[in-house]
Image (cartoon, rainbow, N blue to C red; front, side):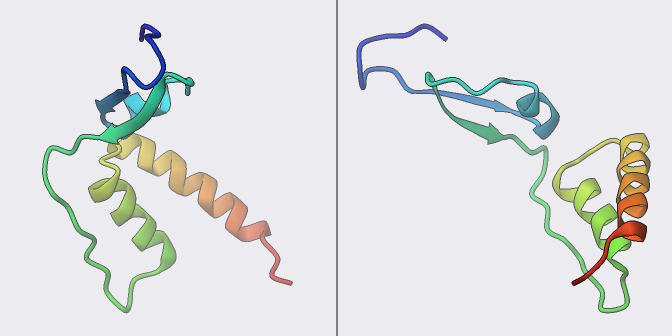
Amino acid sequence: MVATSYHHTIYEIEGNIQELAAVENSELLDKKVVKRSTEASLVIDKDMTIEDELVEYLTYILEIPEEKIFQIVGTYNDYAQTAQLG
């Protein structure tokens, strides 16, 4: 990104969620746009657990690779076991 005169150039970056997460924010960057290969919506069933819903979200909305999903769900389970409501 190259700085230009005030209110002259607006930069936005398009990519998948993982690519955009790696891009540092800058005063030159106006927005990051998530590009999807398809339009997706969640199919949530009333009998699904929160973990099931998390897997659906990570798979179909964020389009995260399956091996990463298992790591994320493992981390979620670790924190869910020690979480205290109160």
